Image 1 (cartoon, helix red, strand yellow):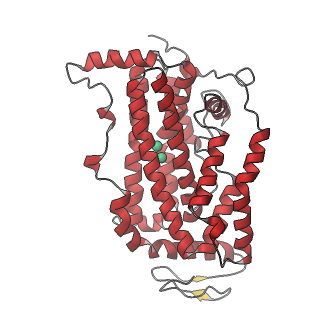
Image 2 (cartoon, rainbow, N blue to C red):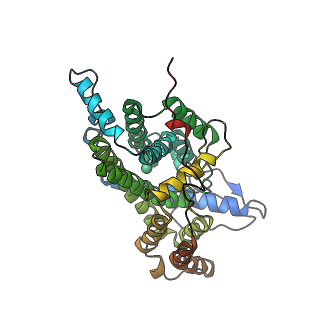
Image 3 (cartoon, protein in one colour):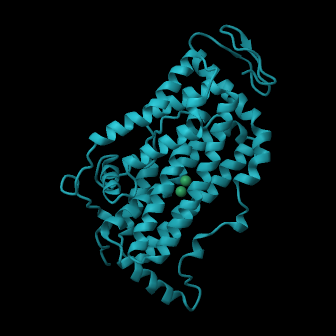
Length: 367
Ligand SMILES: [Fe+2]
Ligand SMILES: [Fe+2]
């Protein structure tokens, strides 16, 4: 659909869009330029909508929880007793749960990578030049809210006394250094489809860690996991809403973007996780298999999230699509069933096949 201020895109014609330099569309650049320019238009078109919607998507900072709300306050007299209680509950966590908690913490701590990726997305980056643009506001607010997750988890691990934090720090350092490729490029459609999925995945992961913590009486970790999961669910809702708007005003392109990303599969942001001395992604494979074995995040979760989003965005009910988008729609609608069949044939590596041995469980060397 053509938006106000735009002109039709035609090959070999100079196109002028409000606020952008004219671009000559040629055979060589047509796909990139047409795609990106129209995405930019949509993002700019949505600014007033997002501005109005913002107060339902963001909560005031004063109303947010902070890491210190859950952890011993060493500035108070009761701090030492609180620390003893925390270490007592952490001692009850099985090694496997602790290791998955470390993997989740590392994933959260690689926030600089995600913040950078988000800032590079078309429409966000352009909007970033104007500090009060609603997309820039969203970017900063999301980062600020997410920042609490890695902080609270990391501090819990330090205080627990059960983990070699230097090894954990090396994994975080490596992960930020290695970056990620979630295959969205700079496309806001693909990126917000990705985040709609990913926030639901982390919601499940933290919720399930919380349930495991509860089962051994680890109260602090149960509460922390609950509030983090709540944030992830909240963010997922915002990202789903962005995609709803893309589907509403640029239906064909949004459907094509969803199909493309689902075809490539949603890659986990910590895909490159590695401990010291191993190849990129090796530690992630071990962590991923362990998370499946203890049911923190499984292939069944992947399938359920996918099916939920297809249904939520009402993909099967979309009409009036282009021939290409219709094919993409058919592909998307068939995916949950394809995954169901695949799931029946998938086997999780056993602990013997892929042992969950991590350097972070090695006790720290004194001195
Ligand atoms: Fe998070
Ligand atoms: Fe998140």
